[in-house]
Length: 612
Image (cartoon, rainbow, N blue to C red):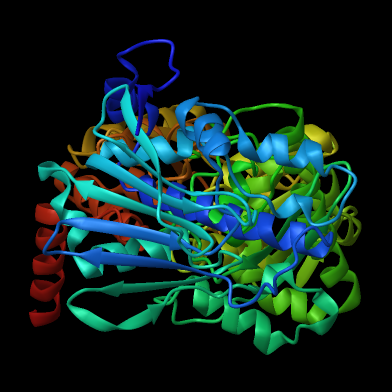
């Protein structure tokens, strides 16, 4: 029997492994099954090259739980290891077996499917095990079977044993803190998480359960040629990825590139509500069919994190735990490629079947908006297929809408005015005023609206977006006709003082007198566009809070309305107050600004008036 020390730079390597090397204990299973997969894929490669005489078939990995002996066994019938290879790949921590193998056969085929690395991956075992055994038999006929053991310190034992079948068996003697991994359902869940699409058949069994449970689909849709896949295949795979997802995806993009980097995958566009929430089901990152993470920060632009699906690339650099991504040139190029594929797909859909694109727009527009405000390259392409919906359900690109309204909707500075509403019900009266003048009004009700219109105005300096309730319609759109006031300057001043005096105490709106048409309302409540935008930019489009609204609302008083003359002529102060209060209450009520005590008093008075 041979007894020696593992080649490490410090005797403290095991505490480091247990505490810092991996971000999550559970990845030990992924690492060991990945190593087993490597061993089988290497054997297949060698067999293809004619370097092995025996028939290679029924290659598989078995995971067994022995609850009585408190062990987990990971067994493969792959390439196995000689004594020299155990010394090299196990005893010399961090030596990459996969890299050396690729170098040796670098001019051959099937190399890209070699998954992981010996050494550090194997040593993740000691996060959960107090003792680890290895039984291994190389494919080489003259090699001895080898037994290796270690108890979580730099001392190992290794000796030759009775001949075994080709392959490797890893036995983990779980420590007390890790007994949860003896539970069948716990291991089953982990295998489904990390190994669901590994390229070698995997099964799970237990000493308590005779039946083996198959784990994985070895040929997932993203590894197949798109020409052999039907819509049903893509949708079936979508539900295989996300079993709890009840609705189908709207459409998808099949990614496949091998130069200047290697990447395959499928990205699905789900139905997304008109809001940005953290997605429960996110894009999965795989490396050669091994699940890595669903945190793709840096790999895909933020706006595409709203999509679902799979990205698989061996060229994305990972740390040893395969759970955190690093930023480098390959990753940046991958991000640009994915962005381009998404924009190309959307552009193609828009051009080929605009009606179908418009039908899907409600569910995908927030993704497009998010991309336009966050990713420059995407913005440049998306502004050509981004479509605006009018209150009448018509769709226009920016250039189409600009062409339609350029002669009729301009402000005093000559800019083309894109009138829009964020709420057709609450802003109905303003919309009606615009419709009465034959103006077109867009519906922009996304939480990202204010950010998007800022960006579009910078790119198109001859246009300006203005919400319909930000001023009287005749001030938003320049009109040659001007109204003169029938009130004297003194009457105007008296009127303003009266209104300021008799405004409901809870409201501190600013008051502004305007010479409007006699047919317009006596009072108009507005929030100036600039002030509202500043607020929304800081709240990502949230509704302006009750405590803040007084700072933004303005009351416009129509000096030409007949009510104003009536108020001024009324001799009794109390009657003046009642007239002003009544008209203001009606205005507040129409804008959903009459609440609590004031609403109750208003309703009570109306009921009294009806009873008279």
